Picture 1 (cartoon, rainbow, N blue to C red):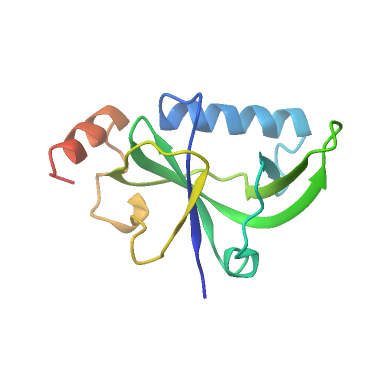
Picture 2 (cartoon, rainbow, N blue to C red):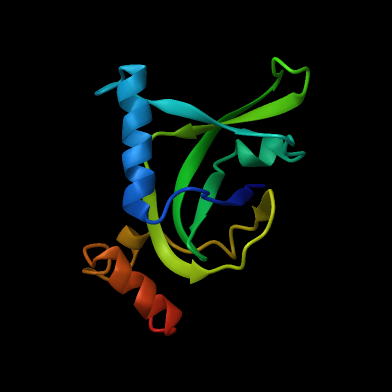
Length: 145
C-alpha cells in the first residue's frame, strides 16, 4: 500500500528555491543528463519503508503550503561520525509542483495518505502550472485553487 511523507522544506522560500537547490546538487554530482538521485538526511527512520518504496513521494511544505513533491527512490540507515543513527531518504532529482494546500508547521515528518495528497499541477486544468507561484499561493490561501 503506497504511503507518502510530508516534511517542511526548511530554508526554501519558494518552489524556485527548491528547484535551484536541487539543480545545484545535480551539478555537484556531475549528473547533468543522467538519472539523478540525492539523499535527504533525517534523524529518524520511517517504519513504513516498504510502503514508501511502493511509489511514495516526499511532499514539501514551503511557507505554510504543500507546494511540491519528489519521488522516494530509496531509504538507507547509517551511523554518522558522532555515532548517531541517521536515515537517508533518497529522492529523485525531479521537483514536481502540486496544487498548493495549506499546512501548519510541525517537527520532523508525517505520513501522508495518498487520498490526502494534493494532485500534481500538470494533472489539473491547463494554465495553472504556468501561473507565477506567488499567484498560485494567493489563490490557494483564498480557497480558489
